[in-house]
Length: 626
Image (cartoon, rainbow, N blue to C red; front, side, top):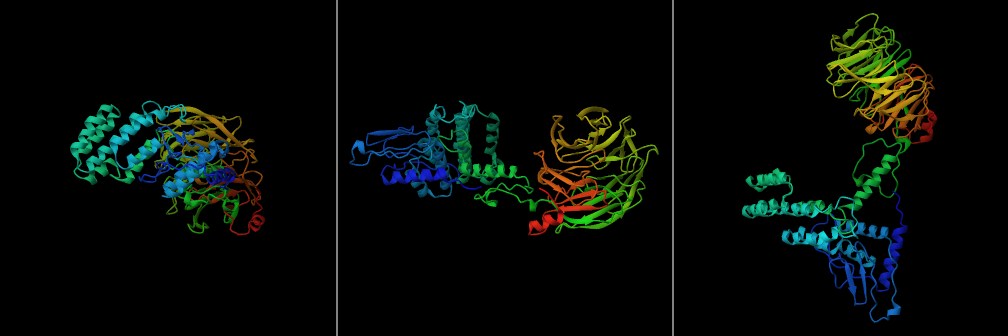
């Protein structure tokens, strides 16, 4: 992210002027919030002098300043007349918040003297003095004092000047805070072997709170722990010391308004949110999100280059001698299967390093050609289906290249689509002549559903529901166990094909004359219509792809491959190279930068990131458009 220094510069000039005029107040007590340890340090108060515990400080008896979060000070220069007072420029609320966030972060790094100087020059206070005192008592393990501090904090939690999130700082919160304090006290007594003291805390302090009785029962069970290691393991607790007390403070801070005590690691969390938002808005981001700020530069905005996206032809596979109707990567991403009008299925091996594909084996004998392929969940088997006039289905063992089953119930059948049950032991198949079967691996008929003219099939992860698009321009859910069915999607035009996301929530449809539509299967609503693709009445197969399935890719009758970000209607890439209709696109499920497309031009194109440093040379070779 590009840093914007305007507000900071203003604050620095203000602080500098205050320091030169002798108006900066001396910092008082307190520790910065979040992760800094337990040492007491002097950065809590706004002014030196009297403090009534509510953030009001006085200097020389002549002026006072009330500050709930950060305040500016007006202190008289020694020996000067009242008329010669020079007030320093007041910081905006945003500037004060930034200074506090920086102070908290510096304190977490152990730069306490720097924090003191920052608070002194700015006239800001890192946190309320009562919160600073509370922090120090917690970190020192002075539980009785920390409990007394809660009474002061209680007033601040209900202060009308406190920044309160609706419902968050309700009346019961001090009870929760007290419970957390006493729980830490109890565990530390147990670890030190002070069983009687721990029992007194449990019976005399925790139980009378009548809060979270289930947790109290769990805590009482820790009395039976024979040694400290056993206690830490069962309680999933770090043990007495800085680590567990810092974790306790993180929990306690969630109950306090940020005007009193900043939430832990607030600056880091804000920066992480900003980075994640920029990644979410990046059209070409296609890698796993790393939540660590160490993996990015905060000095520039996050932008992924198009050259890193699978927009460039890596390979052209020409082994088929006729139209290629289908392609599909295996579930583990190590193989690609392609089916053609030339009656063959070719299995390609994906090199894990270079991502180049080489021919592994050819499966022959599909008399009508191969228009659909489905890998078994464990990638052991591959089922091949033919076009409308094909009544046969082939089930191949991919590892051995042997045909396990050639299934045909009737010569009048049309078996054009297939889907595996998640258990890998059954599959469903059907076609537009009214066949809809569930079979085992040997082709034996287990169940059938009469009168359903199937265009495309999909099995959901529950193992019971089968989705089927039919000739009534709809997708219905069928349950073979209780013979129930229900309508899920209704379109106004024929659904030529569809595919479902891994989580089963979304489906992308290729709709005749309309193009590519995204549906929410759970809410049963049309989410988005994607623009650009040319879709007539040819069967074209689209897919989800990329990391987290953020992208959708589809072939087109205008010879292109279109890619959209799932959240946008306009294509982010149009890939050219094929010379006839692109029938199918498959995105590698384990290599986000690898994609394949099958075309009537007889070729399979493998797409990947730009192989050249010179992007203009790569664009000229591929003819790609933005």
